[in-house]
Picture 1 (tube, rainbow over the protein chains, first blue to last red):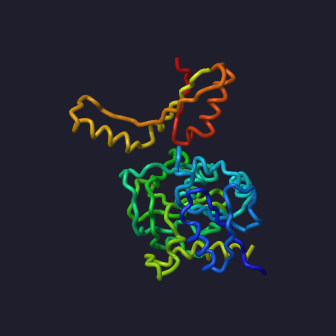
Picture 2: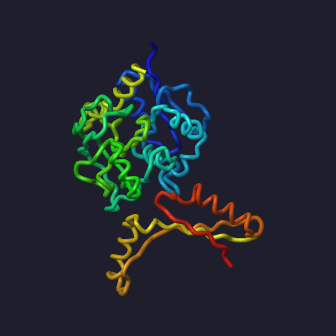
Picture 3: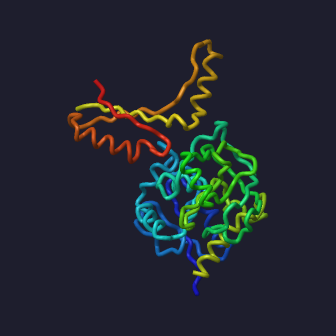
Length: 226
Length: 81
C-alpha cells in the first residue's frame, strides 16, 4: 500500500510545523502540508495540529484559529473519526473547537516554562499512543505559558472515569488540574497534549529522548491496520 | 449609533493567577484593605445602528461564539450610556 498520509497544519504564527512534518517522515509516513486558509484536507489519513502562537494568541490561545477555513473541514472530519493530534497550541485549538473538553489557561506560576518534562502514558487505547506501554514513563520537552488544564468538576470526573486522561505530568509544571498533560475524546481518535513529541524524535538535535516518536509510530500502526 | 459593552470574566471557580499577582502587589504599593482581585476583559462594540433587542441578541451571540470561552468564562452585555 502507499504510505500513510499525515496532514500538518500551518496557521499564521505556527512554529512547529516543520518539526512535526519531519517527525512524520521519520516514522515512515508522508507529511502533507495543510494551509489554514484552504477548505481542503487533501484526503489525508490523519492530521497533526502543531504548536506555536497561531494568530498571535490574540483574544485567547486558539480562539481565532478555531474558525479558520481549514478547521471548518477538520472539525466535522474529526467528529466522524479522522485521527487528530494537537500539541501545545494545537491542544489549545482542539479545546477551543470543543473537540476536546476543558480549556488551557495561564500557568499558575505566571511563568513561561521551557524544560524537559517527565510524563506518564495513562492511556494506550488511542490512535496516537498505542505503541506505548500502559503506565510507561517518558520524557518530552514542554514550552508554554498557557498550559494549565482546567475543566469543571463533572468534566474532570468523566475524564478520569472514562480513562480519557492520556498523559499525566510527573511533577506538575503549570498547575494543571489532576496533573493532566493530555486527554483524548470519547472515541480516542482525537488527542491533545501540551508536551511536544515532535521535538523528541532525534538525539542529534539534543532532544532529551526519542520518546516522542511513539506518537508518530502509533498513528502509522493505526492507519496500516485500518 | 450605540456602544455595547461586553465584560468577560473567568468563572469564580477558575484560578486567576494574574488577579492574585495584582492583589499581592497592591500592599507593596501602599494600598491596603483589598482582599482579592480578579482580572477580566472588556470589549467595546460599536454598532452601526441602535442597540435594540435584535442588535443586543447579535452581540450576545458574538460573546458566546468568540469573545468568551464559556467553558471557563462568564460574560455580560450592557448598553453604554
